[in-house]
Image (cartoon, rainbow, N blue to C red; front, side):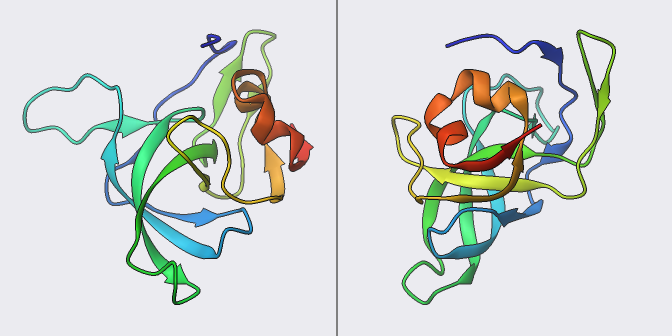
Length: 132
């Protein structure tokens, strides 16, 4: 897996409700678990752009509600700094549902996707509306 070209602060934690910005049928998802992170006892694990997490679908079509799936964080509100010195901040926290291999479940992504995600997951960038 390719490394990130920026120092990403972890701006999303367990319990955060995010917008699902793909057309898989989910509208709002809540983070309930984190994959491949190290933590300290008693502290909530945190994730940022380009990390995969476990989510529960809170709002969406009836077939998707109450399902547990994997999601990739594509936008976060907390600003981060790229190696070029540019500070990037998005308006909302957004995720895209993916399968176990990291391929997106939906066929299109609404809104922008961070360049760090596009470098690490090219299939997600291929269906995105814009890469920032």
